[in-house]
Length: 101
Ligand code: FES
Image (cartoon, rainbow, N blue to C red; front, side, top):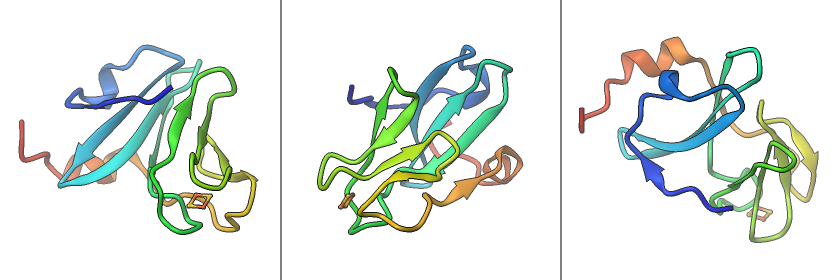
């Protein structure tokens, strides 16, 4: 399903929960896995730039435009995209303080 952009701190996600957040105007997809580890990726599909959407059933980021699918770590599951989604570590996001906080 399509997640609306939210202002939550991804650290407050429950395990096995995803959110789309905006950091400095860029959309990032955050997913906290069952062990509590955060995985943050850019939601811009590496094919031709549509916005991927969260698929909670498969825990993947799926592109509505041409069907590319990415794991929650950003790796390609299915093309036509060939490159992984850009990955971010949470420490890096910390430095990019969100302007709406
Ligand atoms: Fe995502 Fe083409 S832009 S599959």
